[in-house]
Image 1 (cartoon, rainbow, N blue to C red):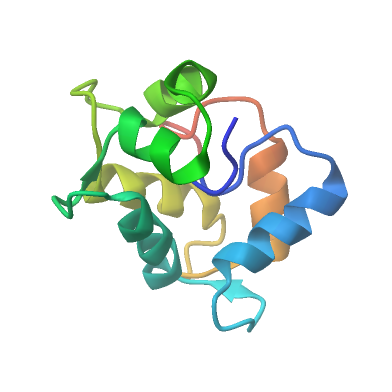
Image 2 (image 1 turned 30 degrees about the vertical axis):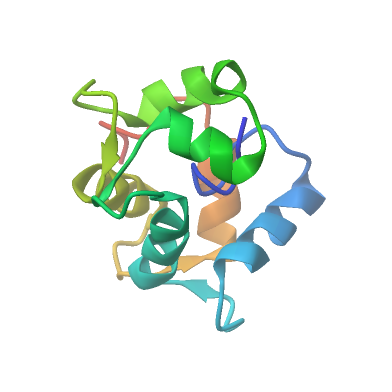
Length: 122
């Protein structure tokens, strides 16, 4: 699965969590904010339509669509074939366990290790 796109997926060993977190944490302040998530999203949005398709993710990551499809589908909550900014916000909010608008490394690791879907989790 693609850990950058899903912003932390998601079955990596503990040392990889820190590496993935660091890649998203563009200002290196050990806190993730939505703008940092959105910057990664924008980098994957090849046609700048504020929605990302599995094809765009595959192209940006050098993975194949079949390699990322199941993971992609789990975040395409409305099943329209795109992950849009609203769905991205849902994922971000699910990682922000204390609901302070920021994701710490501890929150990132804890949420990443959970096996249940992002939607509907508290």
